[in-house]
Length: 357
Image (cartoon, rainbow, N blue to C red; front, top):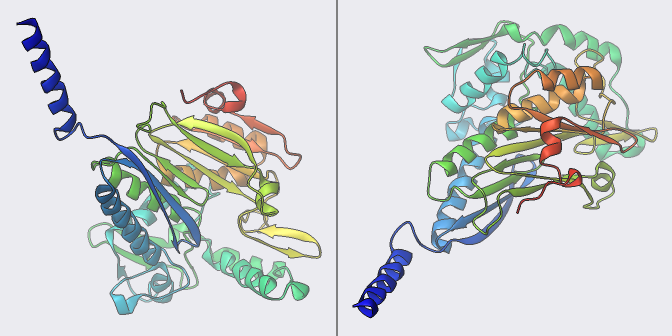
């Protein structure tokens, strides 16, 4: 009887391993480079290549669609898509109905504008478009690279008042009360899109994953290989500039986001000095307090918005700002290469003794 019982137990254990919900999970990965002007990598644990491929395609298609919605520089009206570009062309003439995802992004940004002390402003498009024009010209012809004239920037500044962004919840329309206002959602779009993709995966059967979208990383449940968390590398800003891959810190966590804003991501050079894309709304020039700021929070869109705001503030203000927020941690890298962290960030940092085992 004991042998029979043991045999039945062994059969039951074997059956349990092959029943739905008990399949062996394997690690899969893929990369795509056709959205948001960055490389997006997905790593996930799935029960089969077929399951992974299904989710990877869903992720890719969602990014492709949101890339078009949030695009400031191209029209997709021939595809029936109202993008940020279309809003900038038409929303000053009449209210324009938009997709719920784009509407949600704009409402999210406007509702958090005051919390971010006005530093992350999607209504800065009139100023940022000037910088974009000069940056593109400087990259195309480095020997003739110039800075935008300050009087040109100052003339655009009055048209950056986010209160002129009129959102109608009932009709899901967008209207510009200032005809010269322009939107630019670049400070938030990637993180917001990555959070939507992350929530899609968390609701499905491939909820152990990591998405890396440029400086935006979204983590799902812990990896199914025995580790308690994923390792997220924070890049050395100098390594990024010179084409190296040096990592200055590794953070271990799951079910959250790490978003980094830095001076090495998009820049051009004028008279031997680099000018990046993170523009201080007070000086109308690129901020120079830090090389990078990394935000740790659950929501990737929120972390993206905060990383821009924290980057544009002087350190004392930036740290006080982050420490005033619940569930948010940060790491700052200074021009001299030194770094500071909040207490919560230090607890998950490899340099402070944290591991993912």
